Image (cartoon, rainbow, N blue to C red; front, side):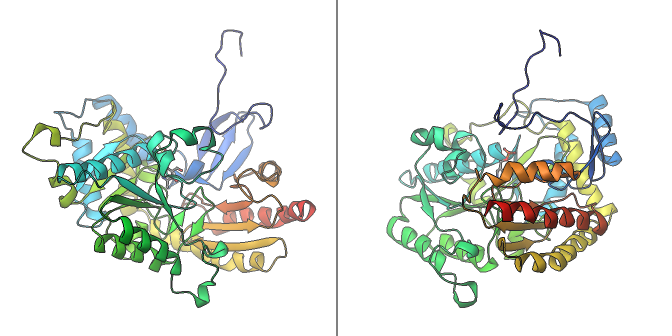
Amino acid sequence: MSASDLHLWHPFTQEGIDPPALSIRGGKGVFIETRDGRQILDAISSWWVNLHGHSHPAIAEAIAAQAARLEHVLFAGFSHEPAEELAARLGKIVPAPLRHVFFSDDGSTAVEVALKLALQYWTNCGRPKKRRIVALENAYHGDTMGAMSVSDDSPFTAAFDSLRIPVLRTHSASCAHCPVGLTRAACHIECLDKLERLLRAQGDEIAVVIVEPLLQGAGGMIVHPEEFLSGVRRLTAAHDVLLIADEVLTGFGRTGRMFACERAAVVPDLMCVAKGLTGGFLPLAATFATDRVHDAFTGGDRARAFFHGHSYTANPIACAAANASLQIFESEPVFERIAAIEKVHAARLPAFAAHPTVADTRHIGTVAAIELKVPDAGYLSSLRPRLYEFFLKRGVLLRPLGNVVYILPPYVITPEQLNFVYDAIQDSLALVSKTA
Ligand SMILES: Cc1ncc(COP(=O)(O)O)c(C=O)c1O
């Protein structure tokens, strides 16, 4: 680095405390390679984006071909083939009533779009009093102002709390820490009662409820019973309130089905995807809407338009990457790979559940989590950096969420590689015993 080089400021990283960034020169399959030639197994799909392995040639070729044909064109007043093909492909896999797609850039913007659509929907319908948003405890929906407002309070939001849009917070179905003090075996999803009370009391003012369907990611890889999600849908429909399903993490197979909503037979009014949309190659996001929502923005007064867009909306190269990734779902045995991952999770987790330093284990589809018993539970747990370093020394990239170690691998991981990851976690438990 010469004196004139700019210093790189990394996300979620505190200089002087966190270790310096590792420079990565390549990636192949589940591995990323450091500049000095070390192979690291990427067990978290590089922040949950990679589906089919790093540098998959079919996606790389589609990107190169599209870049040589048309790199970008504005999407207001213009369209292009990669976006049209992508709309057709997505139309075959998203729940049928979600017939409209609005593209943006990342998970946070997909959430911003969904929130703004939901709020303007009610204004356009002549019910401007419906302005309030309900979100779940433990939620994480992104780092922009709207997305951060609907996310639960955390170290991520603390510096901005006075500026966040006030939202109504309701229970999440976090069975390991049941918000109403029950056990799963004895409960009838009583954690939904608070939402029901809110909707009864303030339904006329509530515009929308937003959830991460079945799996709350950054809040600690919390797996919800399917009845919770179907209950949220039932209640929102009964009280004439819109439902946003934020599938930014769960979309494209992570929970064992193409979308988590499918598992609970739920169709939301608005649905957000990003992360895996391009197979992990380029930023691209989409917010889907039903006819009901979309049609409130058409015709009549000019003020009914959705005045929202980003310079790179529906970037053709990103759309080409997404088309290539969705093609891989057809040409490679992706759901067989997903099933094989689930099988290893189911086989390995019981031994962890029985371990004295483990508070809880959970899994859904390709995602598994092990919550560790520590005195300082939470995102800033002192155990976290020690675990992170331990795993890296073992050649495995795992970024625990505080005291929750989770595995969220690219689908091409083999059972042997996944067992290697589990063996590293098994050996890390000695560190927990020293902390407790
Ligand atoms: C459920 C969910 N929504 C939204 C986001 C924000 O996505 P992005 O980081 O692409 O802005 C995330 C990111 O982790 C997420 O997990």
